[in-house]
Amino acid sequence: MRRARPGAPPRGTAERALTSVEAGADFDEGQGTETAEARGEERAVVASKLWHITLSVSGAEAPLKEVRRALEQLAHDHPFLLTSRYANDHAEIRYWEEARDLHDAAAVALRLWGEHRQTAKLPPWEIVGLEVIDRETYHQRIAEGYGPPPAAPVGVHPY
Image (cartoon, rainbow, N blue to C red; front, side):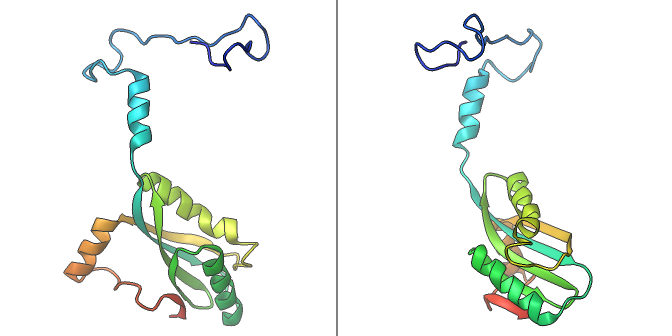
């Protein structure tokens, strides 16, 4: 299979082209006769869904005013932030993230603090906890009286 613009030679050498190599007869036994391209198309159609994220951070003490200002800036930079609770040595951030699956949602959540550390002037704290649950589980917990109550007071609040 050659991948290039129609009529354009491949990059590098004019003789070089990409080809497909079929897997052996025993590869993915029981998987059916579906081709890799068909599976790829199926994966691309997977819709994203909402994930409830609770990110906990902790570290050396920082002045409360600076922590509050930094979390307010984070909420401004990341508009889906629901609520933040903070003290002078730890904070908890809760928000909704849209992602294809749990792995993608967790990856984005784990990058949130570090990516906004400089722009929001966040304290140099470490992530010490992460919970990622789907929307159905979140609502089921709330209905059963488990887990934290819904983030009614949206915003940044002290513990």
